[in-house]
Image (cartoon, rainbow, N blue to C red; front, side):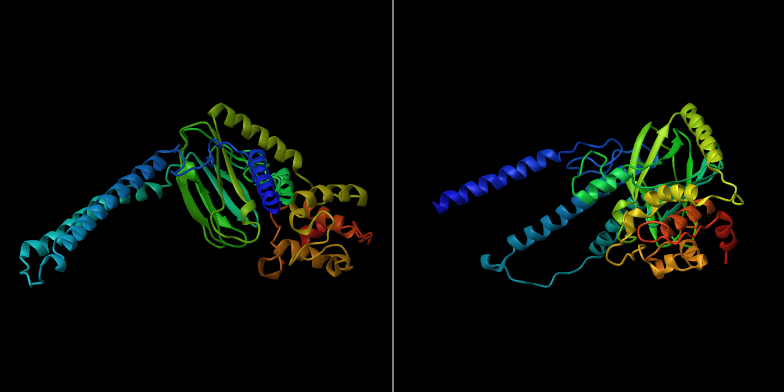
Length: 387
């Protein structure tokens, strides 16, 4: 009976695993990872194609050298082993042997280095770009500022889609783009040279899109650059490739490559959206209106760490009943949001507008058990910037 019970339990367990895998079955994501992927991403830029060729060329050369060297070595060991009567003896070392085992490896290395150097130099040639985009890494999101070319002046923050966070918290992964879907993708025109300038606001990040063959560290206080020219339309994905903190896995990159006509329409739409969002920092808000806005800002930027109920988790401090939040001196909380705290544990949020910062501070001061009645105006935040 016990044996049958164990067999039944094992069968049920296997069935559960099978159904679980079926429920979480995923497909290849065009422009992103593929199921059981062994090779590099399919390239959509000339640089990425060159990288693929170099990869296979060098792999083949190394494999041939490995097989040849070890074949000769093992043949010599087997053929001249002591058990068949061979005895060790001192051999003369002709000069041609010395020249041969020096010259042949040298030629092999040169043959590998020349094409690799050509590609490496091309990777760093960021001149004559059609569009220049500054990419800033934040804990844990990306900021995109279009500096030159069509789209100059467009600026936005790209964060992980809220529903992706909900799925991750619940442990129910769904969709081929799980943890790769963002609210605002980077949009670029096809067949145009895009220069990407990278930097960071807090810790070291790395901007990488495998299909483009690019990976560039984003380092606080430094400016680095790379470039790509996408030759195909579509959506292409990457992730931060530098361990940047506990939310490292929630920092995806989504680049949408569109036609020149669609890109022009996107730029026009983005500029209209930016104009509509412009706020007068001198505007005086009512407590009710600014609190409603603060609730939206908190959900989009703060709830991931501090939780929707303001209780925090682990090293993340609670905002509900927080002494800083309850303090009558609103400048204390303003300084933390502008400059960060705890050696980067609390990132700086100066990239948000004065109105958004005032709104989210007011929201935290008047939500949950915090009923201070305090109101922070955009002018209060503006006055503290740079202090």
